[in-house]
Image 1 (cartoon, one colour):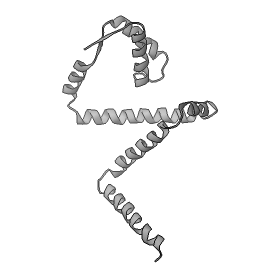
Image 2 (cartoon, rainbow, N blue to C red; image 1 turned 90 degrees about the horizontal axis):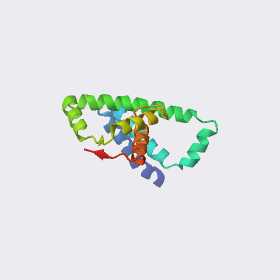
Image 3 (tube, rainbow, N blue to C red; image 1 turned 180 degrees about the vertical axis):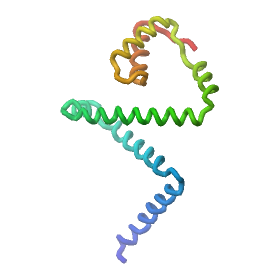
Image 4 (tube, one colour; image 1 turned 90 degrees about the vertical axis):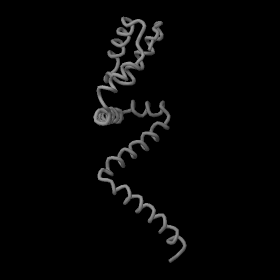
Amino acid sequence: MNKNNMMINPIIKKIIQKTLNEQATENYMFFGNLKQIKRQCELLLELQPDEVNELIKNGHDWADDHISVAKENMDQVFDFMMNEFNDDDQNLTEAKDKKNKPTNPKLWSQCLTWAKSRYKVCPSAYCNGAAAKRYKKLGGKWKK
């Protein structure tokens, strides 16, 4: 056996052992897929936004559609898991109590309507963020 083969064997053994350990859990695919999605998202987020936007504009808008569908699927799984693992009534009450409330509900409603008219998916972080930014710009404040 040459030196290269001797060095590769421990690496291969580690990879095989890691794979076997991951497969020891019944739903190893679920967690493996989540880890892969996380890695890919981190890499995609490192790309230059201007270059990505230009690429998408130049006939690759399918990529944007696929990301939107993936997000919707992740939202559904996330909501399901959070509802299953949390005591729904208690957490909903706590979440409502912790939520900031607009000091000017009428202005907030107008800003939310404005944002909903500009985003395909509402509610979403983008839509709510745009509404909050507009609300603040127009002088809106928040209270606990």
